[in-house]
Image 1 (cartoon, rainbow, N blue to C red):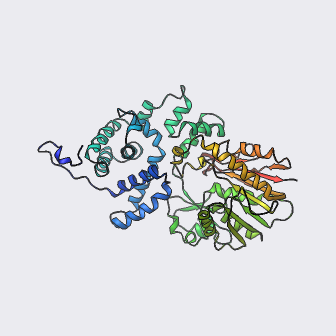
Image 2 (image 1 turned 30 degrees about the vertical axis):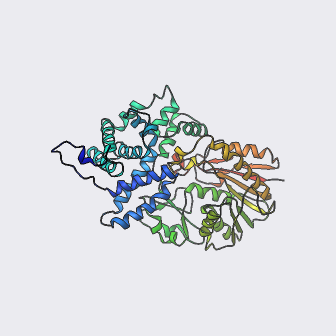
Image 3 (image 1 turned 180 degrees about the vertical axis):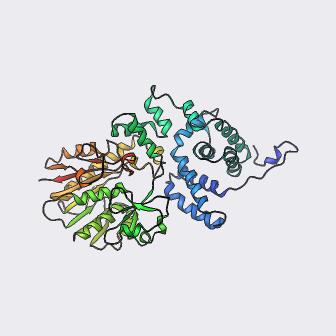
Length: 475
């Protein structure tokens, strides 16, 4: 069909030129980048927002516009599974046969209808205008027809229509209601254990927008300084954490710009703090972060080491990520070194370190609040790729620590195949080791399970779902 709409309109009906809405156009561009280039929204969105401010000017693109664009992007990605089920019920073809750009526009419209307080007429009108701008008039008519069907029911009514009953298929019901792939629901349920309430709370927490959490790097900044920022409150568990409760901009914080503080989830802070607090036998002079990129944990560990007169070696395989580590550590008050090295073939001698952190590459299922697109990008077979690497890195960590020293094995995934299965398998090859009960090393943090390892949860702790096992080398 021609994209010249005036040729296809009935005589006497005026043609209304579509309005170029910079907010929705930006949101569409972000979703296309995520879909086409496997980009991450948290990396794509900031430069798009800056570009829009520069192009439109602060009078036409202000903070409220930026907040709406952010909500449209993240909200659409988080609820993609639910919205796909709704759209499927409103079209006469399989979703795989709907062009991806059309599906992105439809998803943005469905989120406005079912996930925001935008009035129905405004949501439909603005989305159809967007479709006419980016898709052409013909496909905009298709978008309009689908959205009018969606608008006939609210979210609860749609879920009643498109989700199978819990009693018939619990995992598929939860997958549709809470917008997670079925295999992820199954894996999280296995890791969490327990009944329906816990898994529903966890899946719901994955769909909430996380607060920005800062870390005051010891010896360089204090929480008192950070708490002077607008809408800043103390962290829940880490003594170095400060939360920005109203979506504050961390780049506007002086200490963050100077590198004296950083953006770091409280769960990541707790992993570093637990490793630093674990008792070691003998010297405590040299620490290793064996998978240091992009540098948040390394910066906190280096600062903690400096307070004790210890040094940190931060190793990262990818040179560009090693550069990020160096930037994060710049200005650390104590000695440190950053190198680019493969952790499975380390350049250092065995038994060189008193403390070793190995925060291994993983599926990232523990950070779905921050990277909602990861849930749709990951596949169960990804575990087969990560498993050998995770085991190899843990073996390196155990080889690198001296007798009497401590290793911390960490992942940002609660999947049992990436946590306890890895630790159990590797420790069978290292009989002269023992697991340390990590729970007492995080005083005040509740619901840490039966131990000796630790699993944090978004719905219980307000953190990413970080896992930590602490291992002492005994011989």
